[in-house]
Length: 275
Length: 242
Image (tube, rainbow over all chains, first blue to last red; front, side):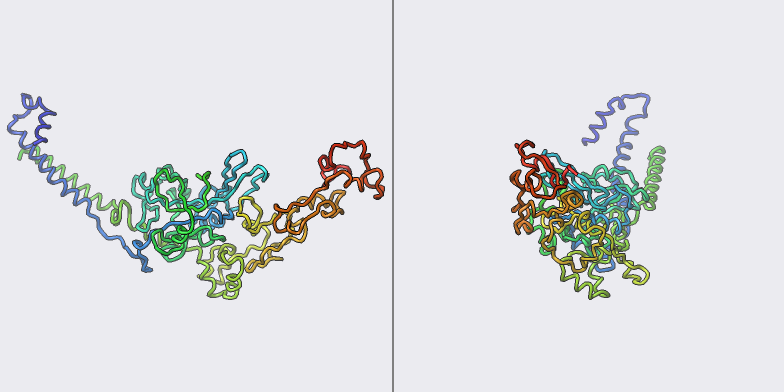
């Protein structure tokens, strides 16, 4: 009934409008038509929403995505800044070699006695770091490896207008490069600067935790080559996994916790200056 | 039902049908199966080829090297860190030979001195540490030995040693002026070497009364800035007077 009342509220003049068709003839029909439309709309929506084909839940190797939920641990104290992770990542994932395209990179923080923080990452740390200057001016200095944080609540996925980036069932934020339109929204949205536009494919790219490796039972390339074991990869929720052990024995932090992105890259021995 | 309603209904039906047909062809098959994305993309992401084979693969053909490596201090350093991605080598061992870094540029990526590296991590100054010699000439990268305490001052103080080397003080041993306790080699900051505490120390060679060879520079110690110890003005490792 309320719909009827609203109709008359909105169009009160209609009833007395001589130019229009007679009231008794049209109003019930229009009402009926609207009713029919309303009744038909769920049907239409239902037809539209039906999707064909079920996505495979298991790949050829007997890998079940539902059994996993991946994360990474990084022990800042163990990182020696050799940049082998950034180098291996570029090789493994065919990332353009020139600077500023990185899926993972190493930053060097130098905090001077004047409380000034200098962050540098020349070529992602692949070719090593230049001298930090006179040691007398340094209060403390350390390396921090960075990569996509594979947030449980990822802003990049939220902003993608076409559904080309998503969280896979095993908790990895992936990019569908065939579906990406290259609008760069996700690059803007990522608070960790973990995304870039591939200059060749013109699509967004980012760390995938080496999804093609982990689904075959291997560890990501950066974890494979880390010479000091500063990077630990594993299941977040597993009772016993290298990552579970890492989280048991270390006080861990995540980057930018105030953004509520719920990152799944956990840092141990992280300095407060790291952003 | 009036004529115009029928026509409108036909138009709406046609529009709806077009939408359904267009959706059928435009929306990928697996879109929405798991969420607001193309579920087939997961398999596509997983199907990419590997470049790094993983250290566990190497032992099949190189058991001797792996056995030596796994017992030594580099046991956490996977083979492919130095030898590069080797999946292609495993596919075709004769065609793809993994490289081995043999020049001095590679090892300092980890072992070159940087204050940002963790305390205790073995580091050297690549400029002063046995220049020109390749690292693998002395160190076996598959089984490197623990760093020994340095035998000479130049191992750590290479810059001073080289500067002093071509100065007039080149022949003067470090221990001539600095008393160094043995534990300075192990805990350098807890046991610092001494410096000459008085002018008479330098006066043994440089005063007018000295019995040292006559070519050594002499000054009159009674008039020459008596308020200072010599090294407060002169850099003894590279004295100005030549």
